[in-house]
Length: 372
Image (cartoon, rainbow, N blue to C red; front, side, top):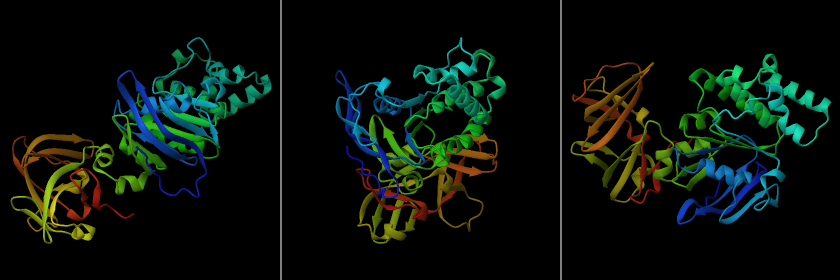
């Protein structure tokens, strides 16, 4: 599959995959993909567990060789080049540090490998420790650190060598909520003034939106789509990309268009709006993100009314997530505030059809999506 990114005239290109695939025996781990990454801002790999994010990163790093295709970096074909000869750093979600080394020695280890002068090592490690607030811990061992401090140490070791390519494989996944939020804020600043290509893998659509940049959506070893993160979220090219880029899951249901009317089920009908009005009569699939489905508060509420039997009611902090069944399809409503629902009760919700994404039955988006 060839994924053609949007025009990147203003974004110098340094990393390119050309028809890269990976097969192991009879199994295909990565299907043929051609993607050109931008070198400013973050490049996100977004996909669920086993989507192929780590494998794709290992191909980029040179840890494994592709079955087909080429990997180009800074205008050079590096497909067969061993990882030891590439200026690349990789950080995993596990806290990988040398247990018998101090924090200082952990950070300094890649610099010692290339025989950097002692004075320069001390200067670089000191600067990186200041940046990541590790200076008071430099003489401690990893076992004496908190989880967040251990991951900061791993990040410092990856950043200190000024790698051309930095691969971050879900580096915040094993941290508690507070530490994740803290490092999410810090990471973009850490790379703001660095001339390197950054690729960050995540299973969290919200995290991808926070980082912005460009996102490659992965599903079962396929690169489904690549482009600016915000645009890809608002106007996904196909249904699979929309599904991956939604948590809780996007609401998906068959609809029928006849004239200017869209019909979801008996009694749930609305007038087609925007570019959906130009669709030919026939069957389509509508996608409505959960935060566009809200509990009804009055009969006069705007939008399309939809009723369903409540199956799950989740209350989390200041948000509520309600799963309900409508006409045999599972729906999800996500809204701010706490509201009590009884399991099994029939509840009424509303959604705004102008927020809908309309797909052909083969999954291609044909209409809908926010313009900006």
